Image (tube, rainbow, N blue to C red):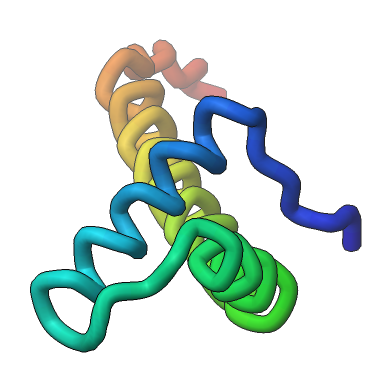
Length: 84
């Protein structure tokens, strides 16, 4: 699996949120430790979240395909049967 990477802007936003969480819930954390924590989560936890997202997307797509199949069946017309 390809490594999860963030743009510079995304990384700055995520690090800011990590730091705000630590300030609010735990002990303050610096920018560098917050970046290390982000890298850890992206590497170790990210694949689980990514795979869950894929499964959720697949389930949503399958549901939509079932709806489309139903819609197509509703559009079908009865054919005339020949009497032999």
